[in-house]
Length: 112
Image (cartoon, rainbow, N blue to C red):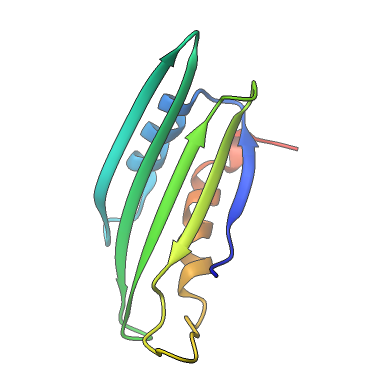
C-alpha cells in the first residue's frame, strides 16, 4: 500500500484545488478533476495527476482529495504507480517527490 499524506489547510476545498492546479509543475498531467458542493458550505473535491520520471523510467500517479466535512479543509495525497516491479515495488522516491510538490504549493496555508 502506498503511503498517504494528510494535513489541514486554512482554505476552502475549491480554493485549495485551484491553488494546486495553478502551482503543479508543467510535467504533471491533470487526468481528472471533480468538485462536489454538498450544500451548507460543505464540499469535496478530487484531482488525479500523472507524471513520468525519467530518472527511474516510471510513471507515477497522484490522487488528491480535499474536503471540509469536519469543519476544516483536510487534504489527502495518495501517490501510486511509481514502480515497475511486480513483486518488489520500489519507486525510488518518485511518490514522495510528487506528493511533496502539493505540500509545497499549500505550505503557507497548512494548519498545525
